[in-house]
Length: 62
Image (cartoon, rainbow, N blue to C red; front, side, top):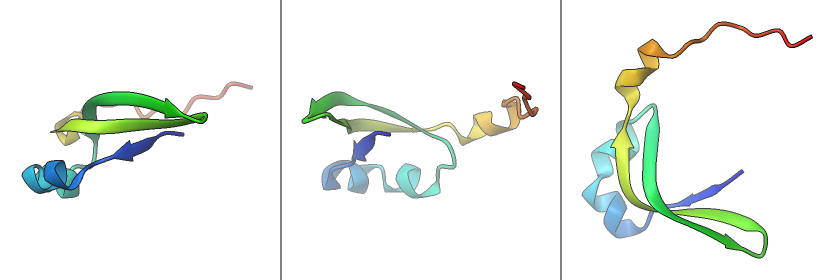
């Protein structure tokens, strides 16, 4: 589990990407404080166009 921190300036600048993306990539700075992981977002990327090419076959590991 990781927390993604999107500061207000990034959210305003990239509002459309933040709200409309179904698959979101994040460039940022990785931080760990007291055992809690945070990704501080610097830039957001809409990768929704890749969803159609993802392999969605079921895997049975038993």
